[in-house]
Amino acid sequence: MRGGNSSSSRFFTMHHVVFLYFLTVIAGLSISFTEGKIVSQVWKVENQYKSLDCVKKLVISINGMTPGPTIYAQEGDTVSIEVNNFLMNNSSTIVHWHGIRMIGVPWFDGVQKVTQCPILAGDKLQYVFLVDQAGTYMYHSHWGMQKSNGPYGMIVVSPKDGVVEPFKYDHDRSIMLSDWYHKSVEDQTKGLFVPPFTWVGEPQSLLIQGRGRYNCSFASKGSVCQSNNTDCSPYMLTVDAGKTYRLRIGSLASLSALSFEIQGHNMTVVEADGHYVAPFVVSSLYIYSGETYSVLFTANQDPSRNYWMAVNVVARLPNTDTGLAILNYRQNNTTTPTTAPPIGPLWNDTASRISQSLKLRAHPDRIISPPKTSDQKILMLSTENTGEHGLLKWSVNNVSSIWPEYPFLISLKKNFTNAFNQTSSPVTYDYKNYDIYSVPKYPNTTYTNSIYRLKFNSTVDLILQNANTLEPNHSGTHPWHLHGHNFWVMGYGTGKYDPEADLEKTYNLVDPIMKNTVPVHPYGWTVIRFIADNPGVWTFHCHIDAHLVMGMVAFFEEGIDRVGALPNSILGCLKH
Ligand SMILES: *[C@@H]1O[C@H](CO)[C@@H](O)[C@H](O)[C@H]1NC(C)=O
Ligand SMILES: *[C@@H]1O[C@H](CO)[C@@H](O)[C@H](O)[C@H]1NC(C)=O
Ligand SMILES: *[C@@H]1O[C@H](CO)[C@@H](O)[C@H](O)[C@H]1NC(C)=O
Ligand SMILES: *[C@@H]1O[C@H](CO)[C@@H](O)[C@H](O)[C@H]1NC(C)=O
Ligand SMILES: *[C@@H]1O[C@H](CO)[C@@H](O)[C@H](O)[C@H]1NC(C)=O
Ligand SMILES: *[C@@H]1O[C@H](CO)[C@@H](O)[C@H](O)[C@H]1NC(C)=O
Ligand SMILES: *[C@@H]1O[C@H](CO)[C@@H](O)[C@H](O)[C@H]1NC(C)=O
Ligand SMILES: *[C@@H]1O[C@H](CO)[C@@H](O)[C@H](O)[C@H]1NC(C)=O
Ligand SMILES: *[C@@H]1O[C@H](CO)[C@@H](O)[C@H](O)[C@H]1NC(C)=O
Ligand SMILES: *[C@@H]1O[C@H](CO)[C@@H](O)[C@H](O)[C@H]1NC(C)=O
Ligand SMILES: *[C@@H]1O[C@H](CO)[C@@H](O)[C@H](O)[C@H]1NC(C)=O
Ligand SMILES: *[C@@H]1O[C@H](CO)[C@@H](O)[C@H](O)[C@H]1NC(C)=O
Ligand SMILES: [Cu+2]
Image (cartoon, rainbow, N blue to C red; front, side):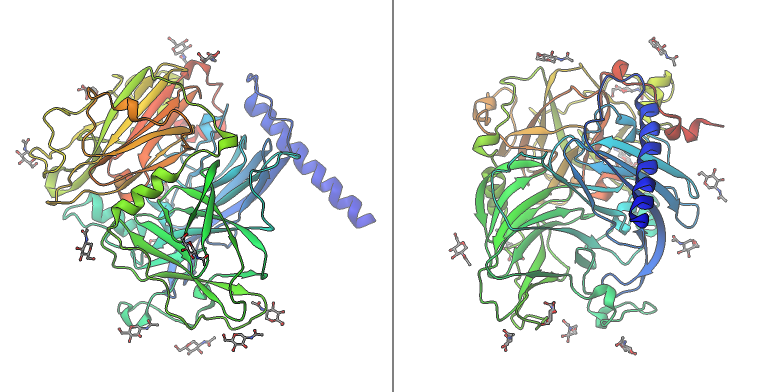
């Protein structure tokens, strides 16, 4: 009894302190965060040697784990995470809460040069935010390309008590998918920014829940590769025969678009980016970096053997072995399936990837109707460009974003009018004369550090267009992610979007899915619609790390005058 009492009083005290802190932070805002519980974690972010794909590497762990701890919360809860930066070499960090809208606290969105000053080595920052929507989300570093070295994890938000989801399952599990490089993030970044340009290349391994397997006979000289290291023993999902599992799958791949399958088991897609989907069955699920899905599967196959779970690269010519995990029927302890692992769908079967995109519709009982029209349309052509000294850049409308000295949100609130180009930047591209099927004639990039100033509460359409890259007969796939919002996916098309061709009549106004990340397929377009009703400055970017840091990013300001006073905890870089 004694023990129970003392631990519950500690519990209370801790929450009390957090709550007081939080009240201070949101003072002046009329939003009530107090109805739910407070979910707190204290994180130690540090460098550790791990052999996630059997090759020893200095990775970034959170509380010793890579991926980091899963955050479990319930809709309406307040999440409070104290991030302690113990990284080596004076490395800063910043954490982004991917898919969470950060209502009332845009300064905790966690984006370098946009929403806050960095958390310096030896320093800490407490992020406090409301999780206002049930579903599957993620967190990850948003400091340069640091994310690709391991600091990421899942956020699982259950519905409010008494709210029934439109599907049933017995057990809830989650896995994080990622790709993995042996080169350090510092060397990768140097290759991109310092001549001669060196592309990051295809990843060495694919990880499922932080575990992969590199063939040690190919390990480079001087590296340590141990195929019996327990860090790289495959993730095992143990199931009971006859039960139905909800598997939450997130991808934070640095580069790769992926397919995921469970040998011998079909999957029913029921959730995407926190929104319920009109269910459909797949044998293989395509997932782009920044997306989350929930699938249901039933353990209804021969339980006397185990099955591979496999990820493969799609949308780029693969040069990476299949990433493997094991579906283990509890009755059987034979760990490694004796069958060959699935090789996945053809990497260049674009039609089947578009087909999955088109199947994603809102669940009929959970439709949130979009506004019928928009107030503003912004055409965004994804371009690969050349910079000075032969460096490649990735851009929007041939304009590569450069990161400002001070975070945009801070400059805007402090009226630092010299901190960035004050012209609102709806640069467009000459869609009439642009040939999306050819290597661009004028690929030189220009640079900007201006942002889009959106009218508060207006409805905005982003028309995302893909074209030929600098390589003949080649167009990429870009997963675009919007911070601070859910958007409706209004439509996809192949070829060039012509704003004068009344393509709006092809939009899905009936049951469009809402998401926060969406792919734009090769030589195609995707249109998304959102309401600019969340005061703050929000990042919109390609979720491929190298593309992001090289400039394929835009920033939207809306309702800046409604943003409350910035907390001192994010202003560290202004102190001097
Ligand atoms: C720190 O810097 C040293 C020297 O440049 C390098 O060898 C080491 O790998 C770096 N450590 C990390 C974690 O980046
Ligand atoms: C560490 O980084 C901070 C911020 O960039 C800088 O002010 C400081 O001088 C650096 N310290 C060392 C020891 O390099
Ligand atoms: C590793 O590669 C070698 C050489 O190609 C091959 O003989 C071996 O079967 C591979 N090992 C595994 C586990 O795939
Ligand atoms: C792992 O393999 C190495 C040889 O590659 C061997 O020296 C070591 O003892 C093995 N470790 C374990 C735990 O089996
Ligand atoms: C998976 O779905 C396909 C197509 O609907 C079907 O042909 C196949 O039999 C299913 N497989 C299993 C194991 O249920
Ligand atoms: C486990 O699987 C192996 C190989 O498939 C089989 O020989 C064995 O009988 C199974 N054991 C049980 C308890 O089902
Ligand atoms: C293996 O079998 C033992 C005893 O039958 C059981 O306790 C254990 O959970 C099984 N392991 C797995 C991975 O299923
Ligand atoms: C897909 O790629 C393979 C090589 O991996 C190639 O042989 C095939 O022609 C390609 N198919 C299409 C439709 O481009
Ligand atoms: C593009 O950039 C290259 C290298 O910086 C330069 O030589 C060339 O003149 C530029 N072309 C145009 C059209 O500006
Ligand atoms: C910034 O400018 C706005 C509008 O001119 C003004 O209301 C506000 O007080 C200024 N803020 C600061 C910190 O100077
Ligand atoms: C500021 O941005 C606008 C629109 O993007 C651009 O036209 C203008 O040249 C930029 N000004 C400077 C000084 O870079
Ligand atoms: C935003 O627009 C909607 C629809 O026009 C309106 O009902 C709502 O009151 C507006 N909200 C704010 C905060 O202006
Ligand atoms: Cu991209």
